[in-house]
Image (tube, rainbow, N blue to C red; front, side):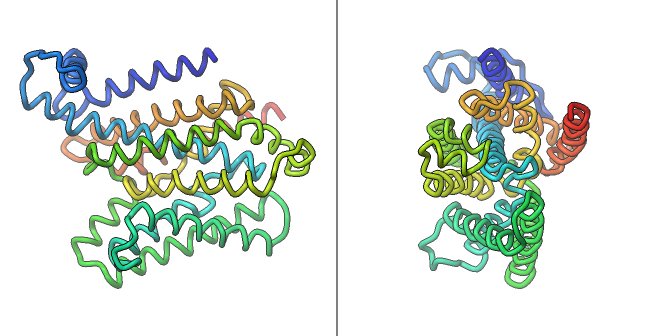
Length: 332
């Protein structure tokens, strides 16, 4: 539990820094006073511009980044445990791509005739993508490689569908905005987005923790889980559904972001072990802090320009995953 507490401290520090660092540096004291004024009406005298930047722009952005990182990390832990595959994550298995297609379909094509919201469209797209990937994997045969190969194929299919929709139906302005959004974009995030992201992340964490012992059993295979009296089918559908929900909500807000759900679960296992009662909160906290740091880097690496956050996660995540694989191979 010491590692979980340390991760919580790091997350709070990351949120604080995320609200302070940017093109205009704001003292950490001003950030603390802004939060005190907004939450407890402390009455500290502050510059309205500084207070507005901290509360309305940077802090909401940091909170959504934290929810996104936590949700993707949780989804990665769940999928890797259920499928017993260290390469499983929402991005590789096509869930993110399917969610992107669903969100773009609602936004541009008006699918659902106004009855579907953007998150709901993303959720349905994520479920369709995972169902297709599972069907392809079943046809390809058993084995850890089958689900990954099916995921790669599914990702390419839904990415192509998204590109086709954008090219065919979007205006030039819509196309530019969506292409930037698909790489991961937190620039337009505000508190209404946070009020959607926070419940989704907390609910997902609660459901995953409720099934922590089941996930421990799935580590040894579905047969072992069934022998312990666990309803394999119900647990599988519940956890895949909650993973798809978390991924879809975050994709609908910030776009498709890779490597978080792949790398963070491995890093968390190295720190706290494989017991899911500890692994799940640790992965959520580490993922949240990682995304905030990535967002800070996206704002300061190039002066006057904001990089897509998916670029930052890939630049950090790819070498980190290579290092983790090297250490795992050295232990084998």
